Image 1 (tube, rainbow, N blue to C red):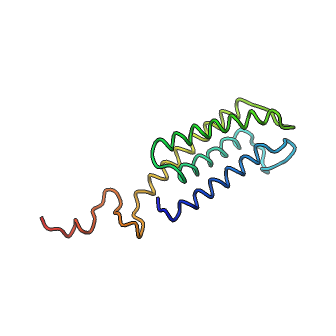
Image 2: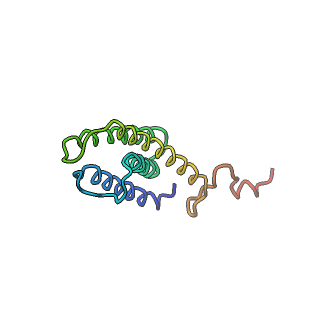
Image 3: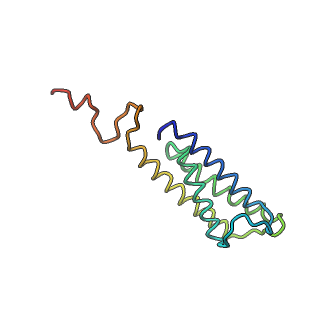
Length: 141
């Protein structure tokens, strides 16, 4: 991934995290999202978080696993906290939607990061994987 864009992905991941946490921990009478699809909202929110955090931070399987497990645990913790917030309550189906969304988002983010890293970026000095450098093309055997 081009280093010039890493900070943008990290900023977007942080912003998405704040939006999800504020929306998840707001009292039940506060409308954060204008549509009412409870399970889909949980799935989509954690899918976006998983995607953005893997693209922003993921450089290998360890970080991918840390993001997937971390977001799943965060989703569980948020559901536990919702039990003490007025108008909110704990639901196992929400925990499942959070976890599945996080795992799908992590997979999509890893796929996107792998795909983008196959391109050659100007100024990186490295040819794309599977291609030959100009020096090796002009070299005589």
